[in-house]
Picture 1: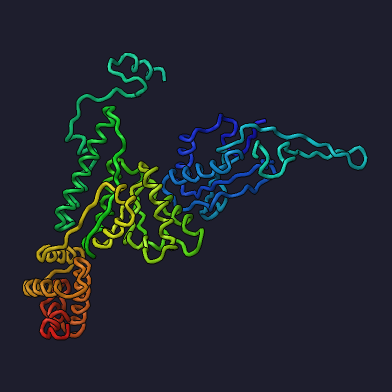
Picture 2: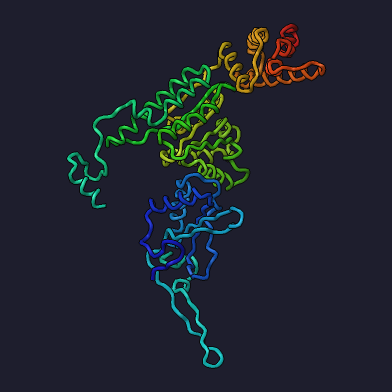
Length: 141
Length: 317
């Protein structure tokens, strides 16, 4: 099941050229671009791990793409996303986020029904991938 | 979309895969004016005095880039030219100033995308403990992407006396990016001639990755005077004719003293003369000043310099 989170996730995967253009747009707006990765893409997992520090004061997308390629070399079998942080007063939060890398095989999620008091049911979404330890999900060794 | 495809089909001279038909004829003058490069070069001539070999080289590079741009439009593909440079020369010969100009030339010609100059020294590239250098160097490289990275006093990066120095790590990262991302970044190294020679001798990789080695000559006496007058004009001062004659003597004397650093020494001398002029004017409070008084640097302001004192008693050195 293809995961849809953030911008552009219903479109076909962005090519590197398209990613570069998007990053350049962010830099043009003065946002700091971050690279984050995870192998636990649960929709409630807000905190992905950061690849390096947020990249403030960049002028050109080539620098971000250099880091993205480094990150892909190490974590090519995980989800990688870009997020753009707007530090201007009143915003001070993320303005844009999109997935730039995903595993070849995405097993998706299952719905668990938990029967509680009475005939009530509580629902939980669980990723099939997280049954395995971190680092071994999505075809990792 | 359709219209484009149609015109594409009807045009007789299309290259397969190319979207625009290649140009056959080029109006060089129009191209030259369009890029606005002439303006930058003229400004270089006007605002930088002397430096003949430097200007010649910059002109050559600018011409090559212009032709390269046209070749690209004609569909004659070639590798992007290597633009990394090294500037060597004595202190105060204008290396930093020229680096800033180069960035704007390269930007006008479209060889760097953004045209910013990131000016760094060893401190900003090399870390203080293990594992600190690589992220630090990379951060600077990322900031310089799309522009020019200017490394002042680059020979400090390599310290032969300490084999565990982290400078070597920074050099390796720099070399790698200089080679692999030639179209994203132009690196300019600057430093004093003899030390840069030693630096290149111990890092042959650097020497071969830099296409343009430009040597900045020392200024002649008359060039230094012209520089002084240009600086004074920018600051809205002027030398009286007596002061000018005294300043010519000052230059000749100062050049032979130790620690002479060309235009930088001249700028410092001018700053001291401004101090003395202000002090002289404030010393006589009952005097009514004209604009001319305030603008003029008098012969006494020049002659009060230590340089003339020292010349009188050479034993002191």
